[in-house]
Length: 161
Image 1: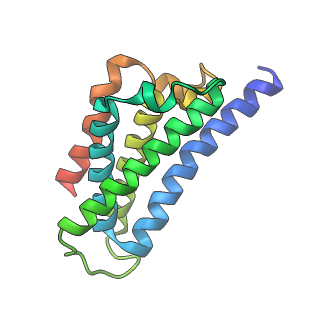
Image 2: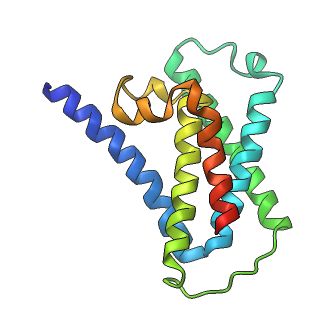
């Protein structure tokens, strides 16, 4: 194993830990319902981004693949923010709790949101433009065979929590 492989593993593991850390800290400060809203918003964003009819019209004039990947990622983030804001408006805000109360549930919800983002990253979003293929996290989330099952994990977590 050479130095570049070690750097790629560290970079990808940092991506995973960073996403988990963001969701976990967000759940501590905003509560469980906020992460539930994000998870449902991400599912709605997935539906909209997969079925969006005019991707070629929006991103057809971009020359480089990295620029197109950045724009597609930005578009998905915009749709995710919109759908999460929609969930925030229509979902009840029922869990009034202290920051470190029900910490295990918050960890599971953060893990569910992380699994969802990782699954989207390797199947829907063009994140492979920024990460080197063949690393362990990609081999876990990237196969098409696992896409459905990884999408099911956050729903099971929502049901159990």
